[in-house]
Image 1 (tube, rainbow, N blue to C red):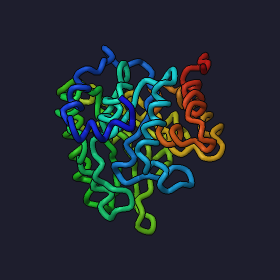
Image 2 (cartoon, one colour):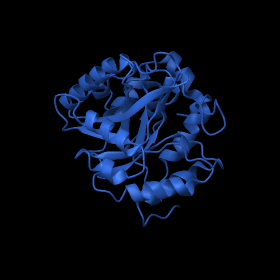
Image 3 (cartoon, rainbow, N blue to C red):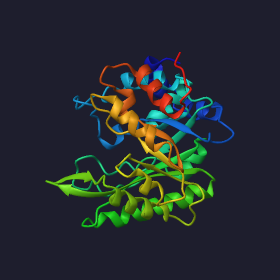
Image 4 (cartoon, rainbow, N blue to C red):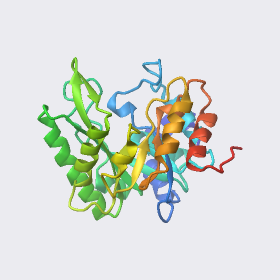
Length: 292
């Protein structure tokens, strides 16, 4: 199927989504090291990439970039909300790939209720029924916002439910605060150690929990705060990707760091070359990698 056919298929045969999901070829187990492309930003109203405030607004363009990234050697899979993953499933590009469903997208970017990250996308049962490989949740701890407690509780229930299906629970934790009404994440070693410590204890079991964390100063202290597998958050690569790539390279040497989850930095690089950006990220994880 082509991208231009998606809307007609969705309108005429909505059951095609479930049929395509049932046909998708899954990996027997998760790889030991992961490179995952993240594409769950639009569902939270976060459309900016670099200087463009609506870079991710064109869905066909986003899907083209995702297809380009997924075909690159060394890319293991994608993280997205149901609309994005279902489009990719219909396009047939998720065979043999890891597919992680994004779960709590209710804390819309810039909203007064942003910390109240309710579960408005996948739940654990839907992830299992769709044949996905795990679920991802965002946890921002804001000590002065009572909504933090609801998000903590929701994430704990999701971790437990995913473990009941023997599926990965990918938790992305931060300590956050508001500056002039906007939520900002604290990227100090101490803040991330606290966030990692809280996230590690969520749910009735941590057996299937992985943590998605940013690269911060003294990353070795952050990694030492848990025995759970860690995946590095891509973040904004800026005008000079070398600094970000060097940070990933150093962090990937630490015990417990198992890979990388990056989205806008690879899908919308400053020079527009998605293939080169993805290959550069893969080369950090796989030092002997050669692009083709």
